[in-house]
Amino acid sequence: MTRDRNPHLNFHDVIILGAGAAGLMCAAVAGKRGRQVLLLEQARHPAEKIRISGGGRSNFTNLHTSPANFLSENPRFCRSALSGYTPRDFIAMVESYGIAWHEKARGQLFCDGSSRQIIDMLLEECRKAQAQLRLGVRISAISKAEDGFVVVTDQGEFRCRSLVVATGGPSIPKMGSSGFGYKIAQQFGLKIVTPRPALVPLTFDAALLAQFKELSGVSVDAVVSCGKTNFDEALLFTHRGLSGPAILQISSYWREGQDIVIDMAPGIDVLAGLKRLRSDHPRQEMATALADFLPKRLARTIADTTGGPERIADFSDRLLANVAAAVKQWRVRPDGTEGYRTAEVTLGGVDTSELSSKTFESRSVPGLYFIGEVVDVTGHLGGFSGAVVRPACPANRSEIKREHLVKEAADFCPCSHACFRWGRYGCRRRGQG
Image (tube, rainbow, N blue to C red):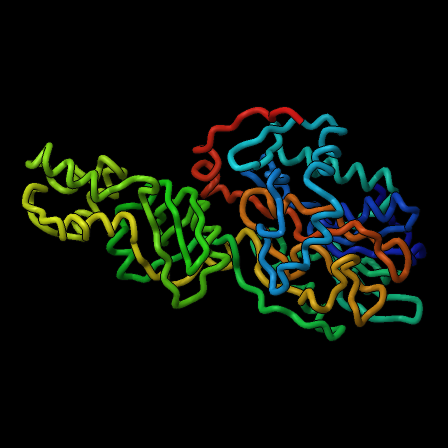
């Protein structure tokens, strides 16, 4: 990667703000088209979110990517991007660098080695394109000029014809993320869909925490629903509330004041099973009976919560139905989320009505582009954010060809959840084709 230290070489065809997945891909593609590209990153290292993604192995895409796997105020916005550059296209690049990968459950693709391989691949693509990278840059002002834009930083003043904002959202602030991109959008009069943490653990109030405090670390396969949306993945009880893939997924749809409904024994007729146990083992306690379907600690908590006679033989059909409902239809109202501190992505962002779906250029400010997580398009958990397409890359002052990026790869696994979330799924080597 070229790092330009000459303060006089300050005019570029394209300046890209942010060296995450979106920014790096954009720099590589624009540079290969003969554009003089400068990439500015405030952190000391590029692509920090890729580094920690997938528990350190980068869940870099998903084979089953479709528009249904993305949230936006305009759900149709991502269609052009997804059709213009597919997961197979990115896989081809990965394989061209000799990076071995494997498929886990549900089409999720991971590096056999480490996420550093994806970062090195993107940096090499930028190097080949002769894109310049400056790290540790602090931007103090951005303005429009007759010939494009002016970016004022602590490393000098830079000018460009096209300005691409790929600064991401405020999720995981310890990685240096912020809402800086939103400020740029607002400065130029673009609307913002109110950002909120997404793919984030849900928290309990004090009463629920006291009730379920003994369950921290217990996991079950579950179907979690909020309104008409549901996800059938794993659930984890934590010392703050609930986490695990199913909860992270539903958090993108849940809003304060809403209940979620949880089936902790999907595919099992718990009521029929309890009736059978009542007949076959009438002296059993309810906690012992429930342990046929649930982890022991969870079975004990549900038995204590629902109450009833000491032996299952003394449970009426109505009481058994109440216990079964506590397992199959547990209705709970979270108190909130863990916030941006642990959120994997940010919901909301630059309103897509302000952007061209084919070029990601601002409709009102020619030459200004927004790509990546800063845009109001958010992927599901499981490599969908990383399954994004080839990024926007200014081909000239007012045009970007049909390469786009919907979301920066941010589908990562914080250390506190990595073993649970990915270790429980058996992985297999990639199949044919």
